[in-house]
Length: 161
Image (tube, rainbow, N blue to C red):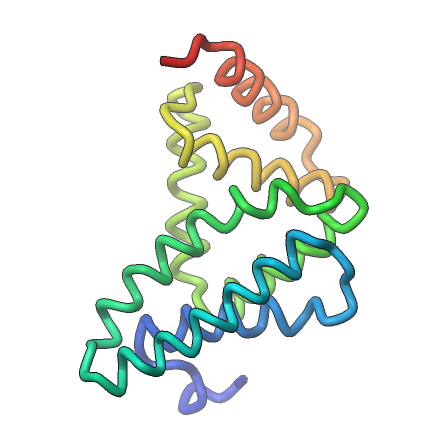
């Protein structure tokens, strides 16, 4: 998919391809969480086809897919530690390949969290946690890692309501 004419045109197509590439890049990985997520994805794909055949718009389905992509790091937190760097790399690659705008938006959200020095909810927590997984897998950026660890520790130390 290097030629512009082959690039996915709609947000739905971009997101669909992100999930397809992500799961396809982990075929040999024996991890219960990934297996469960892959099974869910296969069921969801069948549902999307039914919805589209019934006249549902791609943009409406794309909204759910985008939320699913945002929440995927929450589910990936349960991946076995030995597999986490491979899984995070596969997700990052799929997003960069098919939906780089999403990666840019998430990077902006992360930068805002770093600027405020405060995590304000679970979605932000999982965004930071996912970034930690990315950095731990790469061995780079100890300075940013220490800031992210501090943010996570402070968030987890807060009393829950």
